[in-house]
Length: 564
Image 1: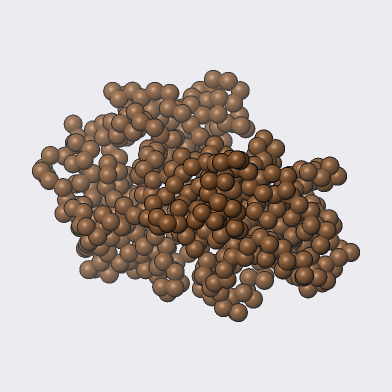
Image 2: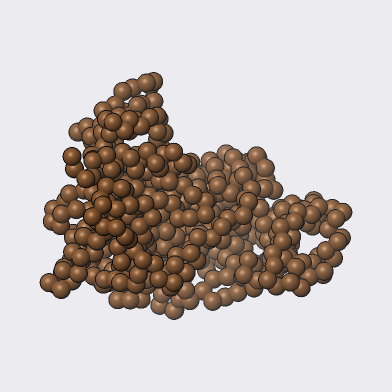
């Protein structure tokens, strides 16, 4: 019997014993379907999945020619997820209900996939790890990643969603660096063959083909692939010729420190945080489809809009508070989700505008999507101080978004279209892209414009520090391009100490505002720091009248000043 016999099914059995996610994917689908493990038969190498398919037709795309592809993700709160991808597995299916299916997947003996050219493709599981660095645009941008598999022909890496924005299918990678735990590595050129969301994790799976390998590089790559194959067999318990770990995976102190720095323990989070972060994740799904000219994921966009509106209606204070948990997202995602959230919250309070809330929120989620579509060698990133010429490039983002929507043959509704087209226009005609004036801008657009500019001013951007809300309100009020009545209503609704902002008290305490009274004064806060003790953190919720214990309210603070 082969040394690899049962390797795949035993590995799957170990993973599904712990907390895990299964998602089924297909190149024809814009996003994967979640599945559940219904059973594992080790003797028959059989994995049984159950999946709810909204269309009721699972065979058309997900089970083409009796083959299925799925991701298996082992979830660990304190460590990076273990992501294992199975592609084109033999499977049969049975309909259990109108939309519920059981899929019986027959796994191969080995986890290795034989491919041409290059022999085996080795998955990095069982604790195997290696870092990857994609140097884009002649070294002007480096994208960090983790290696998922390796072969002579290419590799797959997982890239954090927030760093995947510049990447596109068929894009050339001038320099891809692979670094193993012992410090050995390889620098190689590549081209992105495919990319997709990786399971339910916050990563994008990037398939890279190697190009222009010289003889020396090919020999070194062959050595790495062989070592990885033997190490996988050893860790899976199917290879005994090697008594110890491959030298490649003997971790030196520098590598261990680098990996550990990325595994940040999450403190206990409010219930809505997961929903907000899922909306942020779906922003990347939408961008991925538009960048690669895939069918527009309308259902994903409107699911995000409905989620924000539902959260705003169910517990408004907690909804506004959890927006601060977007701080780890890409800046363009933070901005679009915050603007969409506040726009939805505002429109729901206006009986004559509430019917337009879903379309308007969807428009706000899309309104900056043209900016990441513009990334190229002249504009490698949106997250650093931009030159004048780069800022001029960004002024084309509205037309770029509209053009891409036409290319993928999706026509937005009138309210959504007005938001993405006109949110950057100004009442005095000084805006862009068309220089429209007050008569051409409906109330919904004027409200959205105020929300957008206040969010921009109260968050750091391109080397400019964040303004306190009062400073931002004054600046907008004195600008002839914004509707003062809309601004006044905004101030009345969110106050000078908005829920979710960081405030400072005279006793030297910093706290996040969790709820405010009718006058906009904080009535409940989460105290996180006593400035007298710089190295310690707090996590204490205080409400009236206990707030007196930390002093009088002094004002809004910038979290960046305190590494919060």
